Image (cartoon, rainbow, N blue to C red; front, side, top):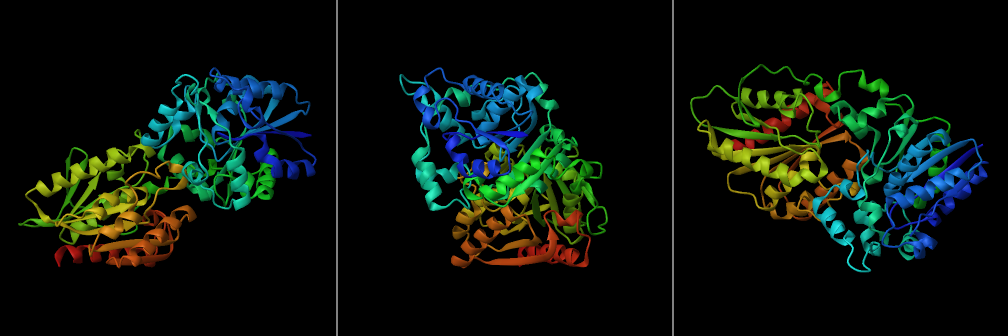
Amino acid sequence: MTAFVLVSGSHTGGWIWREVTARLRESGSEVYPATLTGMGDRRHLAGPDTDLETHIEDLVRLIDHVDAPEVVIVGHCYGIHPVLGAADRRPDRIARIVHLDAGLPQDGDAALELVPDQAVRDRLRQSAEPAGDDWRIPAPSRDAWQRWGSVAGVSADALARLDRLAAPQPSGTLTQPLRLSGAVSELPMTGVLCTGNGSSIALVETMVGFGEPRFQALTDPRVSLFELDTGHWPMLSCPDELAEVLLGAAAGKGHRVAATVSEQPAHLRPFLMEVPERRRERVGRVDLHLPDADQPRPAVVFVHGGPVPPGTRPTPRDWPTFVGYGRYVASLGAVGVTVDHRLHSLGDYGRAAEDVAEAVELVRADPRVDGQRVALWYFSGGGLLSADWLAAPPPWLRCVAATYPVLAPLPNWGLADTRFRPAAAVSAAGQLPIVLTRVGLERAEIAVTVEEFLTAAKDCDANIEVVDVPLGHHGFETIDHTEQARHAVDHAVRSVLGHLRS
């Protein structure tokens, strides 16, 4: 018999698993929904010294009292921290660890430090600094739960229950580093990714292809992945589906990513068009692909997406997609510019924006560039960086382009309060031409942001042209070598150059 130990995230308790617990017990499983010290109906047991170690010990004691030979322990959000700590101390009792819309914390990581957005992290850290009796972090208000994870699919009644039963979080649980011996890394693992909260198998496979160290463990054949088409709270939004996924995880089912990493990563495959080499000059983090010209020419600055781990080689400006675009623009008489900006994590958008602005100034100052005719072209997660330019377009900016862009922060990115919201900025763009390449097979979590942007653009009568690739995937330039895809690239490039020359 399998026993499930269910551990929820911040501010919640065992009560949140009510429906999932019932479904799992109907299947014949033992189920132990954990309520950690200070949470749920145990909130009165917390004190200033309640920390992550307290929660780990809660789970170790619970595991020791489970008689079933196989224990599957499930950690949701913050809950994965005490789950990993407890599994590391009782590895012989754990059959599988399930990361339920949770990260991959490592030894030495504190939960607070893994919050992506610096501003949010600073606010939480300030709240987490004990001041007399103020050693608790208040639960979010009812309208603020969305900022900490998508509530897509959660009914009004369930959201009201979440709000009513939420407890303040003892600050030490978020600030104390997780300590692991390494035993936990030998255990089978399953990731359950909630697409409505910005996670997906495709995104995981992309990070594996980048060589991100934390994601390399996911290539182990003992690791499986599932997707749920819902937000961050599947135990509230789709308990039946979650119960089925947990039973599948316990049986070792799920998607494996190991088969994909032996192939050449998608971003390093050849560009979809044969483009002749052009003269290329490298200045710092900027490459200029130069046309044959005796006078200054307009420039197109290509801004890659991300986050891209800092150790990734080759860097984006040497990826076939960006080399291909840079060469193609140069072959048509403009300067193609590629930039390695430092968007290495979700907290780096401010630094990446500075890198792009510096690159633009460097390019505009080059005597071979007509500094009054520049276009900025954004890709994927780099799409958020377009917000500053849309909000206050300078006169020399003749066009903004975006290809399979992310145009609003995804729910689990922790960027809700930042300036990087193109859908909000577009209302200030006036008649600045915008060329948007949209792929029909886009990841659902990204497609939602594109539609949000297009709705906002329509409402303000923005000057926008949409180039559709109905059968195109995210990153189609190295994946979909079709006539339709080649035509879309050619159309978008010529449209952008047309705005530079008009």
